[in-house]
Image 1 (tube, rainbow, N blue to C red):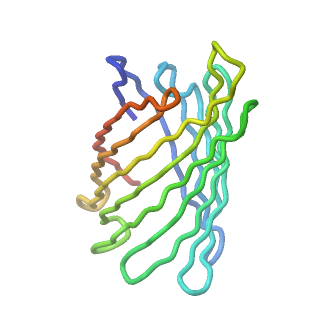
Image 2 (image 1 turned 60 degrees about the horizontal axis):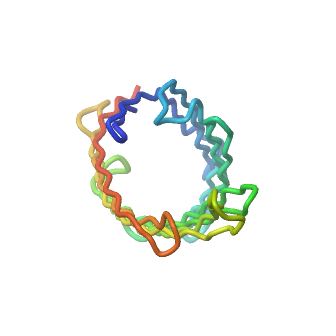
Length: 190
């Protein structure tokens, strides 16, 4: 991963795997490292997915990000396949000393030729506790986001992707900022 944040460039090396465990059950495993300040020093993740009757898929997992301090994010999802589409709800809980940060994303993925070719759309919302340095009061700050994405297999081993994200973040009570993010990727599968 290569990114630019506020005119600071950074690189992160990441390895993801989706091992098959049994019929209808698989896992997501991830490790990453970076020495650049815009990424965590290290990160890891694990999630277990299972397919249930009626085309329902559910998961439970966690992500661990290590900056100066470590942050653990608990996550889970439930989704349903309808025709060539997957509709899902994913929830995130990030505990901290001042309270949990809770967020959720509702998404739809529209598959085309196969599982590697799709268009997706998502909307999300969240609430996070923050304690201002000038006050002992804990504030509950809100965010909203929407995204569109695309992924396409380009030959036997290459996959291209692109996405756009809009986010409205509350950084102080009743004070918001708008954030746009665009990404493009090229992935080689072996």
